[in-house]
Amino acid sequence: MSEQSTRATATLADQYVLTLSCPDKQGIVHAVSSYLFMTGCNIEDSQQFGDHDTGLFFMRVHFSAESPVTVDKLRASFAAIGDAFHMDWQVNRADEKMRVILMVSRFGHCLNDLLFRARTGALPVEIAGVVSNHTDFAELVGSYGIPFHHIAVGKDNKAEAEARLLEIVREESVELVVLARYMQVLSDDLCKQLNGKIINIHHSFLPSFKGAKPYHQAHARGVKLIGATAHYVTADLDEGPIIEQEVERVGHDVTPEQLVAVGRDVECQALARAVKWHAERRILLNGRRTVVFA
Image (tube, rainbow, N blue to C red; front, side, top):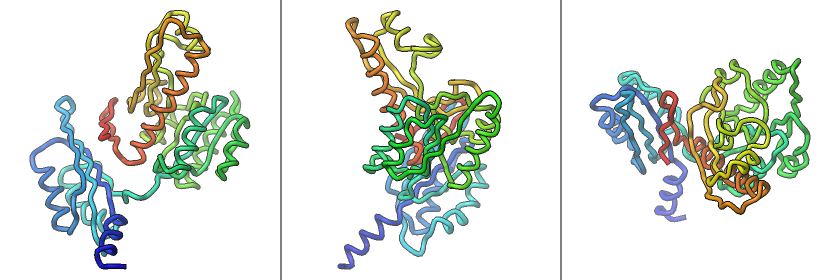
């Protein structure tokens, strides 16, 4: 292998992502860029946003570094800058696949979509397992060689079921839980323990069409847009920070069944993008909103 090829291979391998949020003030970008220069790193891409409403500054920097730089050394040396600007920050390897758990009930379109995208490399994630309160998709999950965990949930065992989920999250070093049409309300305590680490998908008809058969309700009202919203889960049901939304225009001649099919497609698209952006560390929480460096 030539020297040029070796250098290219090393450069591709040693990619990192720095994300940060902090009170906005002068000198943040200078401090970050100077640090990267002094440590022999090269900025590949940088995005930033200052929110005048909250007074917070957000930044995502994708950079490369050559050995002997390591993620542990970067974290140790950047800590002083993080403290100086009161940053909430992270440094991670860009090529590290995020470990996720998928949760599903009896609607499998989002599960099937995410499994396929992960298998083909379209999602930078490693699916550590699938959790369900039913066994409908055990065979599908097994065909991917992924562990399937059946955790039945009822009025009398909800606390035990959530404790088992948290146990799996810890055992598998999971960084993200994805509710791929998991039809159970999570407790306030679980939402707090996994704050910023649970993504849900739902139809954008909420709150106009709550309850059973929302697409049939929408059809009865003659809606012209089918939508879906991916958001972080909080204790406030379906009111967590929005990550992504997708819509599709429909005509007067569609049937309820066709609305359901369109709805499933937009749900898959919105959820897949939200998971991808989270796994690539492109999303930063900004109170009840998000900053998405897509």
